[in-house]
Length: 237
Image 1 (tube, helix red, strand yellow):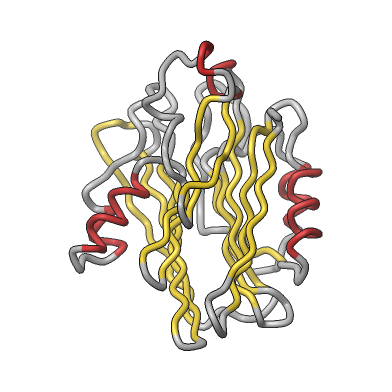
Image 2: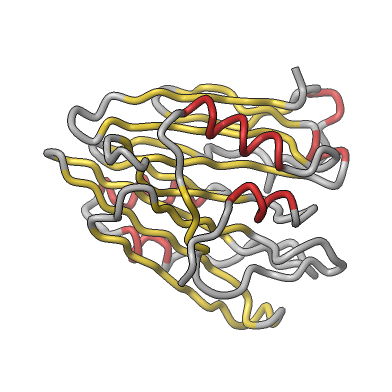
């Protein structure tokens, strides 16, 4: 499959919804991940990312305007030992808790389905990065309704062992804007990565739709020693 420009993928789609990128920097030194959220409603747009231990969580920018926290307040990123979990909902906690009990990423996600937000039935997208003793591999997952049928959940997991330097994968909740919102289709998209965390963060933020973007998280993890750098960008400041 041809490597795509992540900048173009974002620039040409006004509403991919929430998105996860995972890959390896071109110099081979860093495991890279990014997670962004977008919003069309006032409730969805009234959010920021804040640091929470080694991970992050969402919180209301203006608590007085928070209407329904059930699907918008959660921890998108948590760290469990040598694994970094990134998801678009409270399934982060499910993966964290069940992997703590020696279950696998896939086993944890078998206990969950798509979001109960009819008629969109937003997919739950998840990623996990394993970095240990100088090795790195990652997996991505999507849980989605069967073409809008809420009685049937389709679960897909994509595993990437020893990923190539400079390559990553991008998965997002919606194909594009619409009513109802059409779910993401196909495999995670192969995309080119960058060595510099600041340049990568700037590229992502600048190409997300200005009206709909809300928050962005980026982390570069040193594959050799596990140390990391993080960037958080919030539209609401």
